[in-house]
Amino acid sequence: MNIDRKKNAIRNIVWGILNKVILVLFPFITRTILIQKLGTEYLGVSSLFSSVLQVLNLAELGFGNALVFSMYKPIAENDGQMICALLNTYRKVYHAIGVMILMLGLLILPFVKYIIKGDYPAELNIYIIYLIYLLNSAISYFAFVYRSSLLLAHNRNDIISKISSSIMIFQYLVQAAILYFVSDYYLYIAVLPIFTMALNIAQALCAVKMYPEYVCRGNISREMRADIKKRVYGLASYKIYGVVFSSVDSIVISMFLGLAPLGIYNNYYYIITSVEGFLVILINSLTAGIGNSLVLETKGKNYHDYNQLVFLNTWIVGWCAICMSVLFQPFIEIWIGKDYWMPYNTVCLLIIMFYASRATTISYLYKEALGLWWEDRIRPLISTIVNLTINILLVQKIGLNGVIISTVVCTVFINVPWGTHILFKNYFKEGEKTYYINIIKYAMITILIGIFTYYISSIFKNSGFEGITIRALICLIIPNLCFVLVYHRKNEFKETCVLIKSIMKRCL
Image (cartoon, rainbow, N blue to C red; front, side, top):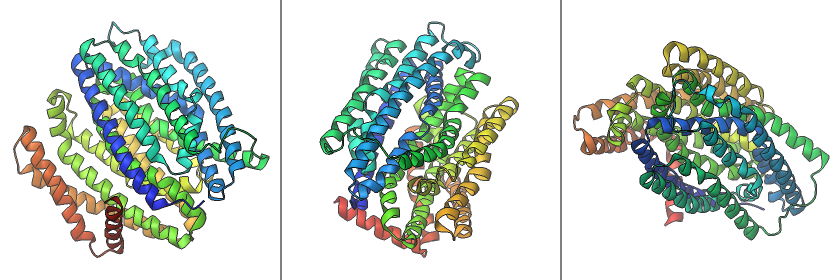
């Protein structure tokens, strides 16, 4: 089966963006009501237990990613028997993972109070809160979530986005109403497992309707089982790495600094992850298409596409970073007030962390599509150990900045060079030096344009909505105009213009 990669990518991007707008706007509203009605410590509780459960989800070890990858080839070859066997394997393993998460979660229950420094809201029973989050985390593994792998492998992320948007709107409206009218935190989180179950069932029914020929039957061969195990072992280090970089920070902040600092930090981190979410839409919309391309296209064509994506990605990520440097503090002031500001040096570190991780994400995209998890299995583990060690040491010395610095150091000095080398060594074979030169060049250009944009915006002293509107317009025009002036002679820029015109024609 030759998947229409451009059509699916455009469709996935459009619906992914609409879904992300919903998943940013509605949680933003509920978060605002939560802070106003209950306080920032409740926000810290939500952030903490969400992070703890993400650590427990390590039990999945990337098995879902390995199964979706294994489906690319049988889908391209119309091998329905193999797809059914893979689906059956997926179901069995996910049921076992669900049981494991519940058991591990219950073992952790007696120690929950030790991961919170200082006091927490006296009216809260943190054990009940934790159990609700545990149920919400485990329930997906029993509620037909394996069926969604068919949609992902066929590059139909747009279907998942449509279903998610519909159910999530209702969930956030219900939660906002609970907070606003009764201000009951227990009831606010009690609805989570209900909507998680509804989401998984809806996606499963859609997958059954679209691909009725695929049912859970048969068994994969011993060779296929060994290949999947190898990929899962490789992915396990990725999962550990991902959890440490995204979730353990919240646990460390809670343990060493307390719930209130965690709540303030999480407001900024929420904005960053919201922006990252839109960028991930672009990446996820291309993942299955790239997997199909790597099977059917030449290495030269794939290398050309890789360089094109690196250029486009660094432009978008650089622009987002510049916008954050100008708009972060004014936005927080308008949203919840200056009392919730972090020092600007901490904000700058967060922006550097964002740029370093997102500007180099295309290499990870290709490694994932190529299934190079086993070859790259050591790097995430080393990065995890170094990050966690520096994290714990620096948070006690310099506080919150230490948590962020540890992530930046590991990203710049371990993840980027090591991960990129794995990709080029195992697939492209050449061009690695050119990649580093381009990435450094793009970063330096972004820094210079960012400084210039910040200087222009600082000329205007307006505050409130008027001030942030002026600064937003400056961020929209100045950086992109500078990027055009700098890059207009590059082949990647010319091809990007052609790509954008093609996308606009297909969308109109």
